[in-house]
Image (cartoon, rainbow, N blue to C red; front, top):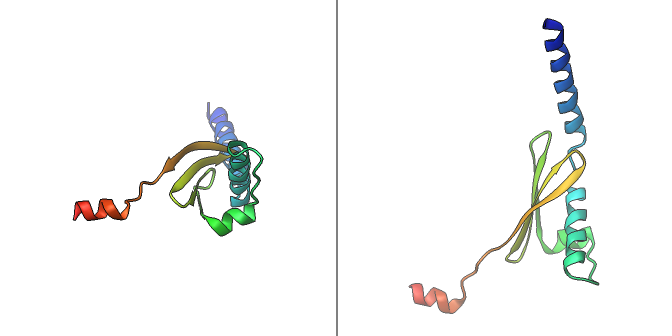
Length: 106
């Protein structure tokens, strides 16, 4: 029983170490944003460098996985990354108040 427990601990430790080593870097997330943009806007390609210049990029690492958000204007996208893979989570649009709506609330 004790031997199986040790083997299980070693396997879990090895898996966590492997996931830590394969946590996707920010460049991999940017590449995915660029690729998704090209699929949505057919015929339009945008480089990862251009994405960094026109929007805000934020990667939060949790060791074995990462969460990533990219915002451009009032549009944002979120991704999840683990084991050298990047998965789309959601997109959102941030509502902005027009000057007329501000006046109505005041």
